[in-house]
Image (cartoon, rainbow, N blue to C red; front, side):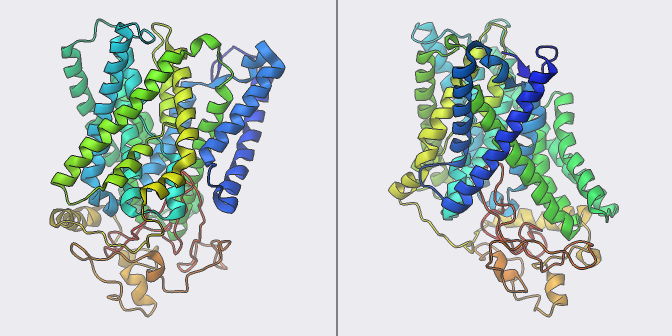
Length: 568
């Protein structure tokens, strides 16, 4: 099956026709998602599932009408387009919307689930598939192929679940564990996939090979993290010392600096996806507040927009590809065993690690929360993208892609559809106020204090010389007649985190249709021009941003105050 991005396979007319039809469908899917996520809120229809369903229906119709010629119109998008065009915006936005203080509070559980859990799940699925193949109970794959497949199919993408979580305002513990784990899980799974893929077609995978793979993983993951931190700091220093007043140039430079780390990491044989993830995290904290107020709002808008378009395109392409392959690529035994093993592997990730988290950390993960974490392990964009890049040395790439496609369809429709029902059964708290406390430990507070003392002055403009003072910064409140102490200073463990509306110096707008208003000069946005549901969606689902400028500037680091709920 030829793919968009391959040269010389099809006439220009066919390629243009495919792109035209794809863009029309993409526009229709965005309108449909708006109806689902912001108007009708159907209980059993998720946005990701609806997009896949549209692609699946169109794919089926084309197959019935065109028969053998269907593959000319239902060809997939090449792996190069996926990994250079679609995945970077999705991953960057995930890091950009990950709140620093809340992430730090849940850091140990998130790392346990995302790193240790993903590693265990990958090995379990891969080794089990190899054992089944050796026993002639499943499709025959080499050891390296099984491990690479186990890694890619362990990448979770709970897009539908997170959308429901934000709409229903679930318990913050539940929300941040699922979101934080999914962000790092993608990075870990991709690094493991790339490492195991190196062994496909080589000599037998031995114990020594496993040791090499572990060392390679540590080098690539932490090296990529360092590259992300470096680019985040360079971006902050650039915007600290160069005042780009014009929004077009400001956003142009910021967008390029956000994208370059992915290509740089790939060029030096690290993980471009991990690089751009941590670039997003550090850019949000250090660079974001060096932008103008208008630039801060535009940054959220642009990154969210690109992520939404990319993720919707991936799910649409997945649906369109269902009927494009040949029947011999679908192996029922491999699909059934893979589905069973990923469910067991997810359980081996969640339950033992939850026991360790409850035993050795201050975060307590209840039994029902554990069940919900297991349930939230949907497969999606990352797994499907990796399957398109699977090594084809032994001619098994189409089989792995077909198997991954079916697994994604089953989890998106089977699990994403019943998220609300599962929340009700598990009695997960809903409608939790965004003002719940973040009880940072003494060590965590010390880390933030050291950062504020050394890194923040180095990388950020002093507030008194900054033009982007925000409604929740001390300087802004002082200039507008508010007591600088009214919101509370940077506190120790247990201090409550006020919501954005509490910090706002003007009435909180209740009209969902209110948007940013330009001041009469057209230069930037007024500080009291708040955002109410402006961005309405992000790469991980229909997660609405809180109003009052939380989408303009985060505020953690100005006076230690930030909204408890993620502004995604």
